[in-house]
Each structure stands twice: as structure tokens, then as C-alpha cells.
Length: 331
Ligand SMILES: [Zn+2]
Ligand SMILES: [Zn+2]
Image (cartoon, rainbow, N blue to C red):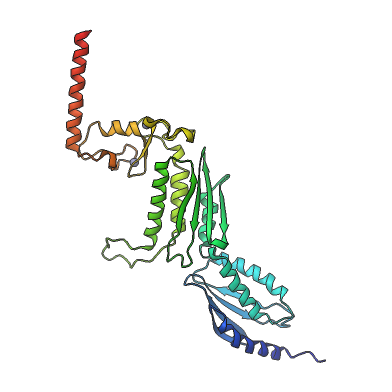
């Protein structure tokens, strides 16, 4: 039997491609000619790739030659995709390869929803975590589980990446931690707020500001929870007494109410009793400022206006003098 002509083989496959590819969900067929097949796979606005396929001499005994382009998926991710595709193409030699490969690429993107945040995940692994910390990818659920340690403290974080990321923000949950409950609540609320600000324009518009564009929220959330929270606070020094705010033993943090902790607006931590004494001591004019960073301290527990604080201070001082007089008189 005579070998089929190379051009006829390709023409027959192209006919099949023209018929079947537009019917595969998410695909647009841009070109299907002997020198090139060009198709776009679009799962979401940000999970989109343009695929070029060329037939080498000796096709189909040789694997197809592929090239990928994407405005939203990173070059390194596309390099990785290329590597697995080359392996797959070699397995398919002898068959009609184009549709097999297009389906393979679709499957890769569908089954790896975290591909859309690949650069952010690399950044977390390379720049944020260290030692025994772990980043576990759960592609099936589109979730990232992060376990971070610092001294005797730890935090487990579960981040869900929605299908239309980064237009929608990540959902963050602190699933377990031994930081005091007050900090855990603060951390969780702040992480949600950071993610929200990535995708919602500010209420107060700055004149002449460029139009708001949603930003990827995974990296800012992890920068905050890992660097600003877990890695920082076990080492944090109370600006008043210059001792570590958190106990070396996490179990002791909540046991002594006087050595409880307070977190103020600027993010600095204080011992409860240190901050209380500081807030009740002059000068009060212009409000009390954080000795750590000189920002005004805003805290629900110490919301008294400077004049009132001044009066209370004066009363306390007067009482103290009276008491000293009595002690002097008695001695
Ligand atoms: Zn202190
Ligand atoms: Zn401060």
C-alpha cells in the first residue's frame, strides 16, 4: 500500500479541526491552514491562551510544534505548560494530534485553577515563607493552604481563589493559630479589608486619578498575614516597657489579664497595663501619640478627649498629694 501524501493527511485533519474545534467549549478557532492552526482557549477573562500549532515535516510521525501566548498567564507558567505539552505530543505521534493537544491544554487550565495566580504563589514560596513554613496547593478546590511559624507561634491560613480571579478577590480564613484571640480577630478582619480594597474602588475619589483597575489580592493578603502579622508580632517590643509584648509561651498570653495585649491603630502592640498608664499620663495636648511611630493613638478603650484626660490626671495627682500628706502626718 502506498503511504498517504503528507499534504493530504494534513488537509484531512484540518477539515476535522474546522468542524470540531469551534464546538469544544471555550475555544475560538482563528485559523486552520496547512502552515498554521491558531486557536484561543478562554475559560475566563484571565484564564486565556492563544495556541499556535504547526505541522513539521514527517507529520504525524513527528510531534506537532506548539507555541503559546497569553496576556494574563505568566511566561513561566506557559513554559511549564509547554513542557508537559511536548511530552504529551510525543505520546500522540502517529495520530491526528491537533484536537488531542487542544483538549489537553483545556484540561490543564480547567484542572489547575490556581494557574491564574502562579506568579503570586511563586513569590509567597520564595520571599515570604522560610524554615518549616509550608504552602500547599489544592488545585481541585482552588485553594491554597499556608502554615507559617515564628518562634512558638503559628498560623494556618486557607485562601480560596475564585473562578473569576483577580476581578473577584480571594477569600481568606485563619483556620488555626495560637496568637491571642484579639490579634486573630484583628488579623482576619484586616486581611478581608485588604482583599476588598484590591477590587473595589475607594469611596473618596482623588481628582485626576486614573480609572480604578482591580488588582490581584493574593499577594497583598499574604504579605500582610505572613510578614506583617506572623513573622513580626512574636518579636514585637512594647514601646513603653521595652519588653516583648507576647509571652514566649503562647499559653500564657491570656492567663494574666494585666499583661494582656492591646493593638493600636498604627499596628504597634502594647501591654494592656503599659498602654493604660501611658494614655492616662500627660501631655494630652494633640492627643496621645504612639512612642513607636509617633502616630496618633486611636483605641476604643481610651476615647476620652484631651481636656477630660487632663482633668482626670489633675484629680488623680491631687488625691495622690492628699494621700502623701496623710502618710507624712502619720509617720
Ligand atoms: Zn509593656
Ligand atoms: Zn505605632
